[in-house]
Picture 1 (cartoon, rainbow, N blue to C red):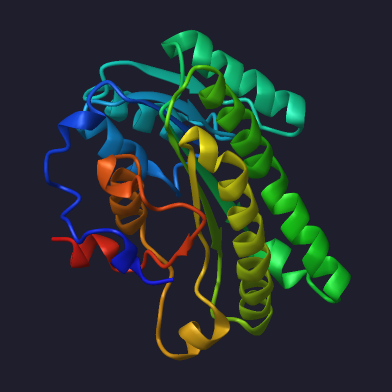
Picture 2: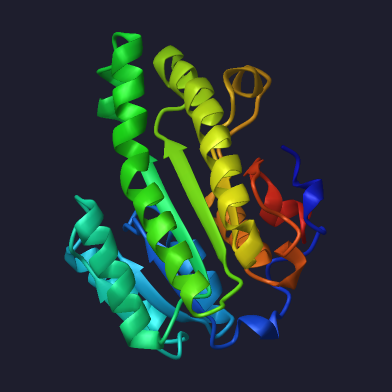
Length: 249
């Protein structure tokens, strides 16, 4: 859907309400998500970061984020089960007393896309890709409910090499499934003031029309807006984020 559901703003504008906000970001890597984490850090948010990457480059990036974030916790244990997701959310809550916003980053690698041969392969890949993010979503939303936090949860799915035939087919099926899941989750948690949205790769029609995937800066702009008062009327949507950083500046 179009980004007109959120007021056009520049992501660089000061957002004092994010100062001290408790933000959980999962799936962070040296290739994806740094701008999202940095945007929250620059606004004074306290960060809980999960990354499967424990290399020296990731260590450096976390050190850079720590220069502006008032508090930061970094977990580099992969999330491979619901129990892992529960332990991460519990650690976040214990560290900061709760969670105000969650951003789940879900990359789908080129090799996984190239291995697709049948509809069953597509369904299996989507299920595997979304499983952890949806688990974190449910567990984090429940924690927010228990402590009366009206929070934001954003699930971001990106597909590498999104212009190939397999990738475009995957994007179409993924958008449909993600839209269905996001609407259902948003309805489930709406009564508790918890907003759930998603960003998916562009559809095959959009790609053939010249659209590209959202950049890290675009993702950061959307995530910031959804975590503030401007995003409190937005829930249950799959958002088209490409160009958001430019349009809002």
